Length: 186
Image 1 (cartoon, rainbow, N blue to C red):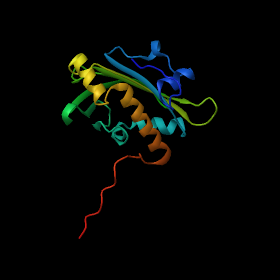
Image 2 (tube, helix red, strand yellow):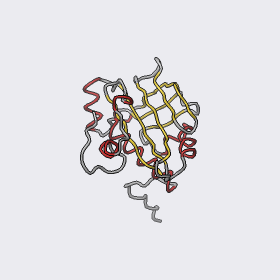
Image 3 (cartoon, rainbow, N blue to C red):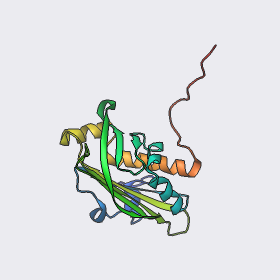
Image 4 (spheres, one colour):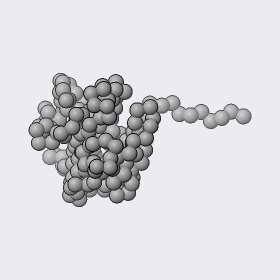
């Protein structure tokens, strides 16, 4: 699904392919829409894992996620037209400090799976964070097209969310392009 291209910024498939970080056959999902993305974060692996594993932290850098239960089983995400979509998940693998994998349960509104992996940088600086997201969009191919047009398809979404995660972990905040709200005038 993702197409590498030359001179890609950090965190895109082309950068991962050029550095040998992407293995599509071993890590792609089995759903209609899938993506693997990566980013380097200048923080220890244990810190990044701990923040991500506290699932209720995820809305801090995932704007399409309204809430996640503390156990990670129930997610509420923003759907088409701002409607709430409930995802029911189960953690299928959890290796502290390294890896978390999940998949949907039968009660979920959307069939999905994913994983996040934390690896020490080979040169001793920071952590490589890799994420795979795979799901079957509501309404099949039409839903996939709508998600792409609205820039909510997995490749775009995962890349943006990883950038936000990097910002949050390195600076303590996520930069936005929204103008600050002016104080009311009296």
